[in-house]
Length: 73
Image 1 (spheres, helix red, strand yellow):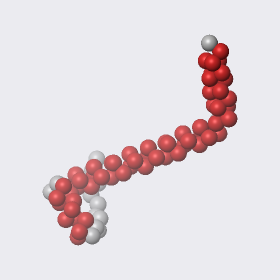
Image 2 (cartoon, rainbow, N blue to C red):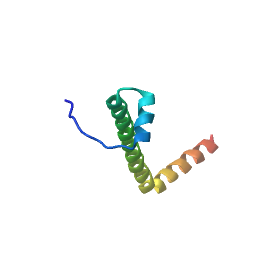
Image 3 (cartoon, rainbow, N blue to C red):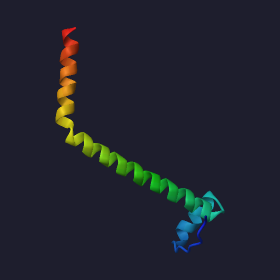
């Protein structure tokens, strides 16, 4: 479902958008989707880094054990 909305943008930005595609709605939709995907990816990466940080000591011990085992071979 599409919802009609009104957005006020600087004339310079509109001119640049028109260079990309004469269908401003399509350009703005693609830009909004790309922006949201970036935000979601950054949020996911932040959560992943927090999880890794909370488990860093255990992960480092496990890696050290694996390396020590490899040296014994």
